[in-house]
Image 1: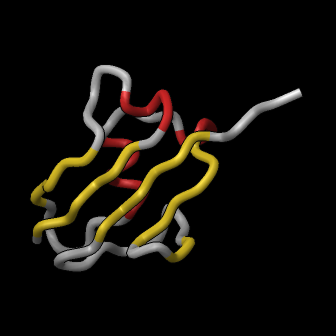
Image 2: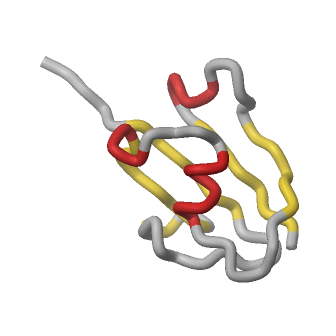
Length: 74
């Protein structure tokens, strides 16, 4: 199935801004994050089609997955 993956902030470093990717059926958001070598503890927000989701959420054909890092401040 084809899924669009969007990365934000420093997750884009040495990766991409947005990319269409092919995944097997039953692929979860966590599988994608792990495959991109992103530490799950650095993930702040996950969204599929502009709705919050979890690492365990399964992706479907045509989904748009957005991955945001934890935001720090002071």
